[in-house]
Image 1: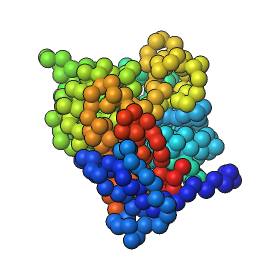
Image 2 (image 1 turned 180 degrees about the vertical axis):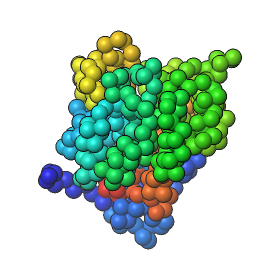
Image 3 (image 1 turned 60 degrees about the vertical axis):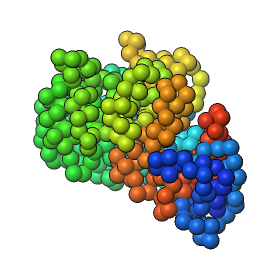
Image 4 (image 1 turned 180 degrees about the horizontal axis):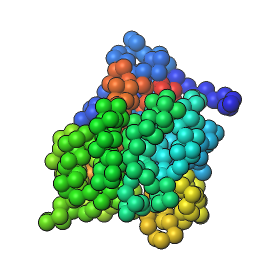
Length: 384
C-alpha cells in the first residue's frame, strides 16, 4: 500500500523548554540525529525548535486502547491501523500497543497477521506491541467483552497467535481463578507480561497468581472485585508486590479522582500506568459504534453498551494525562512517567521508547506550560 508522501522536517534540537528527564523537569536542550536522541549539539542534525514556554516530554506509550478514528485493531484491517497510527501520533502518542477483544481465534488471527504487516509512514506512531485483553477472562466479569467467545486460558492458542503476530503480543490478560490459569502462567510468564483482568479473583487467588508470575493489573478497579476491609480482593494483593504494575483509565469517567490519587499512593508513580482504553469512536462525533461485535453508544465522554455498562473510553491518552493532572491533582511528573516511561518498561520496550535519554527513539511532545495543550510533536526525529 502506498501512502501519501508527507515529509516532516528533521529536528536537530529542541531548545529553551523544561525537559522531563524521567523524574523531574529540568531546563535543558534535547538533541537529535538519525531518528535518535543524542548527547550533544555537535552530533545533532536538523532544524532548531524553540520550546520556550513549553514542557518537553517523551512521546506517550499507550498499552491499552482498541482503536480511534473509526478503526479498531480487531478489525484486521491494515488501512485502519494506519489511520490509528496517524491519529495517535497527532496527539503525541508515538508508540502504541493496541488491545484485541474477546473474539474467535479466527478473528484474533486476522488481527495478529495484519498487525505484523504494519509499517508506519512518516506521520504514524510505531506499533510496539499488542495487548491481548480477551478471551481468557471470567464469564462473570465480561464488562463490554462478548460473552460468546469467553474461554479458559490456553497456551497453544496463545502460541499460535503469537507466531502469526511475529512476537508482537506483549501483554496477555487472564482471570487466574479459571481452569488452566496456573499452567498458562507457568508456560508463558517468561515470554509475555501476564495481567490479571476481568476477574472474580479474591485476595488469596490474586496473591497466588502474582507470586506465580502475573505482573500486571488491567484497568485498575474496573472488572474486578472492589476493596473491602474483610474481603480485600485483588488490588491490595497487587499493591503488596513490588514487581506488579497497575494501569488505570484516567478519563474522568471510569474512576473518581480520589480513587486515582489513592492508586498512585498505593502503588507509587514508578508502578502506575495511565491507559486510555480508547474505542474506535475517539476523534469522531457522538453516535453508535461497534466494539467486538456489540453496539456502543457514545454521548460526550461516555461510551456504554446496551445494558448501560461502560465500554471503554473516547479520550485518548494525552487527554487522560491532562485530566489526571488538571482534574485529579496527580503531579505532572508522575502523570508523564505513568504515560511514557512506565508503560514502555512494562512491555519490554523501555530501551527504545518512553524516554528522552540518549539512544532512545527521538519521540517528543511539546506541552504548553499554562494549558498543557500539545504545541508540537516530534516523531522519530521529525516535526509533524
